[in-house]
Length: 334
Image (cartoon, rainbow, N blue to C red; front, side):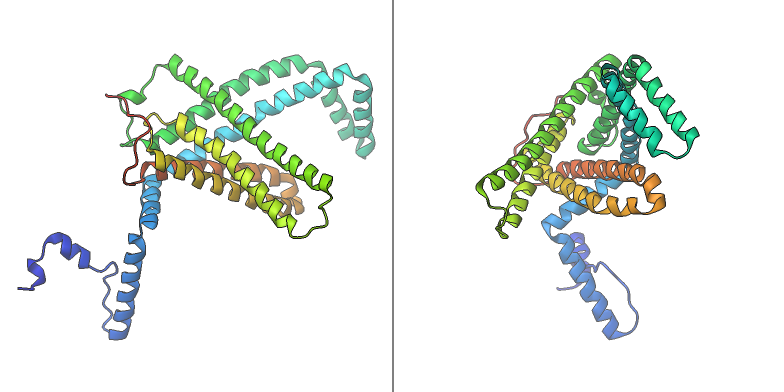
């Protein structure tokens, strides 16, 4: 017998169309069936199915909300960094009185409003006089906000990486151990960021120096080749940064192949984000309103896209399903 009712439930579910709409028009119904079959075939592609699984995990485990929290703490961390920067400038100006006088004269000469010029002059002098207090306060606040930022990033990545969304016994740590781990992770992340930025800048400068030394500036076909080389180096630097994030922060170690491919996905995505921000920020700052708020909005958008990309790739690594993919480290027993 070929009655469909006698087929197993799995077979009936398999034959059930994705879009089950009957309009009464035979031609329209056939078109809907074709679209449904195409969508089913497209979703069944392993790579597409993997992205769908990652997207579902990202949404179910509050990836957008965690991304907003990371963005908030990222932007908040800029305030103490600026305080430390102003303190450093204050120390430089205090040791060079001539440079300080030139800066004050330029401020006064470049601003037509005498009240505003006097206010900025007093602000610079106050910053120089209180440089020690501002620097120490900035360092303390930067340390606290940096630890909070690292803690939120760690918890967000772990929420995407572990088998269940709820925290288990292994995820609950004593407060002093937690802050010690966050401090070590923050130092490691800063070192990884310095290394990646150094690789990018040194490679770019070396390329320009080599081209000028060999007298190859006039060769047109060499420009796209050098651009491709610079792009590859930048992606490699991004790869090192995200490899550190996905390897150190999650408590449950991922599979090797999933980690390497997910890190490459994050590195390429981060380079795309940097390219888009580089293209859009100058246009945003061209308008009067953009000149006032463009840098703030640009930084917030950059942090938000970085957080979402990081969490999505963490979900992508966690939902990977490759054959013969060994786990890098066995999770600890509960």
